[in-house]
Image (cartoon, rainbow, N blue to C red; front, side):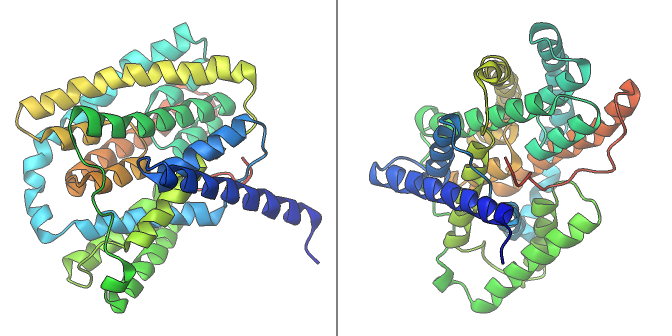
Length: 362
């Protein structure tokens, strides 16, 4: 017999997925952009703020990110590898970008928003949402503040970035996300599925940060460079990933109080504009220096989540290798420095390593 608490959890997940599906249909019927990403995101966000006790889909939501890892790895061909040396000058700007963010962001959260030093640091740094929350919690930071600030950062950037791409840059966001599954040899589909699962679990066992994306990325990269696969995951898989990523962002607002909306969410919104200014400055430097086209420069320095920026790069038809390499550099630096910061301020035990698991009960 199924325990009552399990039934309750399953029902909450089912309701959450139904609400997200309604969002997809609503966006699809109104011909709004990215229905499989924005539909679930805004539907679950509205439901969360309305008081619904939504719940993420656990390991299914986490596992959906592996599809993006495979998509990136499969996009890196020998031709892309040959272009890496040309990206090094641009990548060298990422550490300077993070120093500028720390110099502005930490004082903003500490002196203006009234956060303690640890919470201010982990709120300011644009790492992965889960990684920053986990590190910040273990360092003694305010987990609720960290969750809401980073969820708001991702939500605003994912909402605004497509408008900038389509409105200011004239980029069409209807680039095919991939071939239909029927158009890809079944052997390659099997190899991609194996790369996703094996890469995820091996990276997780090794304690690699962002294991759900980095592990499959490395595994698919190896398959791409050796000629085992010649395409990205099918369109159906990419849409599946978008659905769960969008739902996960909205679910992050479950249980938010008016006080938290006024303080944490408002702080996150204001900080996004601070980050936007810095991102524009650095992307302009890259573009004006001839190191990247405008679209790639914008996406490479946009301080959104790695998964969300990967989705946008795919639908915009951007150079995935360029965009992802910059985001990987940013995340590596942020996550590497996080435990060092925690040990220096002595604000809690040092984390043994980042994890990719989103809490099941949000």
